[in-house]
Length: 246
Length: 246
DNA sequence: TGCCGACCATGAGGATCTTGATGGCGATGC
DNA sequence: GCATCGCCATCAAGATCCTCATGGTCGGCA
Image 1 (cartoon, each protein chain N blue to C red):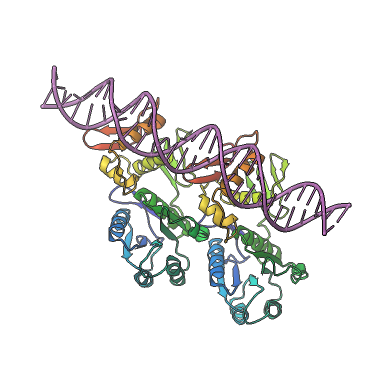
Image 2 (image 1 turned 90 degrees about the vertical axis):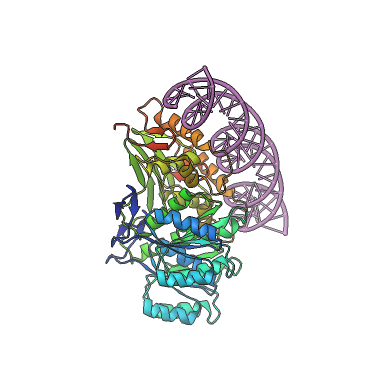
């Protein structure tokens, strides 16, 4: 089932109408705080834990619909935590967090069961999108919530990463795709550059703030080229996307 | 829920009809005074605190629906205050105050949870508008309170920053937009140049008083051009906006 | 008629946005 | 390994837009 949240965004709900529950496990407080904040904003109910022991306990009590699990925990090996989580929650999808360098090979195979992973440092849009995908596919949320965003004659498929305008397929790079997804999930609303930076770029991004402007210009080139523009600048405020018609 | 106050303005209320509660945290007394006055005028209930410790305590007792938080406090780091606030009030939106130069980089992640920020020196209209947005989106106030102001055939959308008269879209600059918003939030009421200056321009504005006249003339050119005028001068008193019909 | 307040034209200066050019980095294929 | 390619971020220049001060004109009112 989908509904419209106070934020005016489409959110996932369980079949019985109650909010989706997500357990976040990481030993860095700043990470759990950041994720909790962002995921709560999606309308989900969040519980967090700082180590493996806490995670198992929280899983037992909280019965989450999905788990975000850092593979590097102080007290237990990530795989051990996973095993015991699985005993508690056999069918719950897990989104793994791993350090970029700390190898992807140990993850290999883990995602076979329909799980997924992202590497640190991640962007919030990425984590949210993957979690939505996991929850949708796990059946914890109603299937009718589909993965296609539509604004005017512009469509974006979060599953296949396909974008098209007026039927014409458009190829986007990864960053362009995430930026467009964020815009399209907040149509007709002005988004400040700070907001965009916080959601689309990874949390440790230290670069120039004008990357946002740059990628907006890339998007315009691909999406608005020679057409009625859909991406608009609000000087001193931010950017927004809306159907070309109005 | 929205209702109309004795002043003839539309104000936010909680679902149970009681006034919205806002906690203001800043160590400069002049700022908390200024904000408290302006926010009380919105019909909100205000509590203020001068440091982090006081903020936490006030949060516990006062249970606000939103918090205005200066990032520079004498006793605690802004982020530390934020963390402890979140523990007390997990879902309450926060509006951060930051120094203009004190960088946008420490803002990283702060707007991720649907929070927002303004830089000092701010204008009261801006703070009020952002707070209204935060409260509306957080769901603390009734859903029906939407973001569109209407006076006669003139409409202004606070989310998309769109303005139109008689269906025709009008492009305004940031300052023009804030001025019109202030006028439209006080229809049929004479607003003195001093009031307008205090509200729409930032509190440390030192320029000539005739900026107000100037921007009124800009607005007239865009809004009243070739139409029945909606913006009227009351000589020696100020300006007011009202539907063209009456 | 003279005064004062309101309105408007102009332009300087600054802030913001856009775009092209450039180089690093990782992924891919040989 | 090595070369190549695409993606991403930085830099810098240019264009545009916004803000505000100056000074002039207009109109109402005593």
